[in-house]
Length: 138
Image 1 (cartoon, helix red, strand yellow):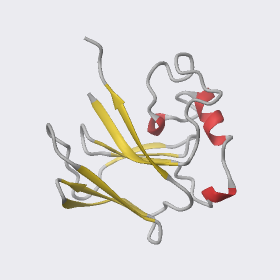
Image 2: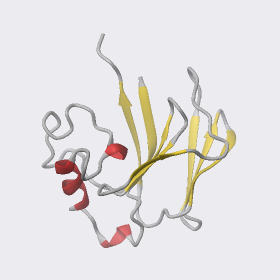
Image 3: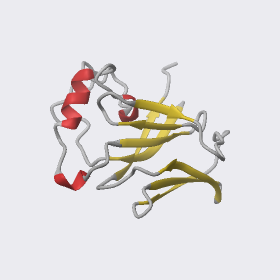
């Protein structure tokens, strides 16, 4: 299974968005752009409020499978990048995230030990936590 966890703008992922047609059954907000899932991209960006502030980072997540940081503006950018301290979650364990809006950073902890700053700036405005889990049907 694939698990992403992180921060996302407070939006509805299903209001006026069809799970089967728009999401194709996989709700993964960090993979949305105008090139990939354009209908969803437009509907998510249309929910923008003043509380989002200046930042164009609308979703930032830790990928438990490979430890990468995923970032999107739900328009042109979907970035999957390396970061210092990156580790994947092998088997079971605990992942913790710390959002510092004063510094605009998102840090990752694995089994109560700090791995490092996954996203080093640019996060501002209103966010909420999210988890996205994909499993294959057997």
